[in-house]
Image 1 (tube, rainbow, N blue to C red):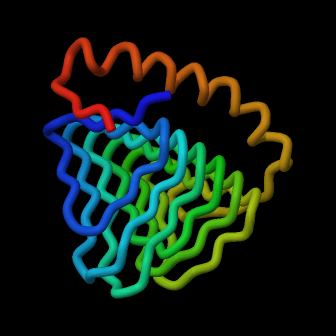
Image 2: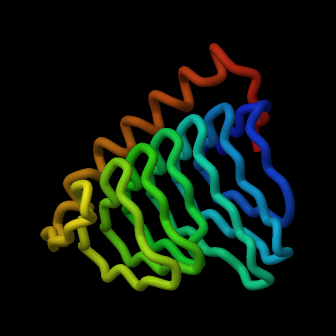
Length: 162
């Protein structure tokens, strides 16, 4: 299992990437405040994703998360098996549990705590719960997505294999 980082992704500061994580072109992962960013295993960061830590404290991102195109993440903790859809914004110091979905263009407030199995959707950031089994159902799809990216990205982009 290979960690793949496209050369034109910007990684600045103290950043640790877990095994199997894939970072697309034009991603920005930046530690501005000096705190480390710890990203777990098998995460996918698509084009234009920004993950920023403005704090002196660490930012922790769990395993098997999908950050879709142009989302913005300034949280302090994100659990496992989450999907952050295009142009979604996770507010400063927000905590997100496991198996959550933040819908396209949805936002969280700063310092908010989002419990596990929460889905945020719609123009007014409505919330509902989903079954915990949803993470297991998405797991095979996430793995196929990772396999495809590991094969395809190096063919069309300059990459660093870590």
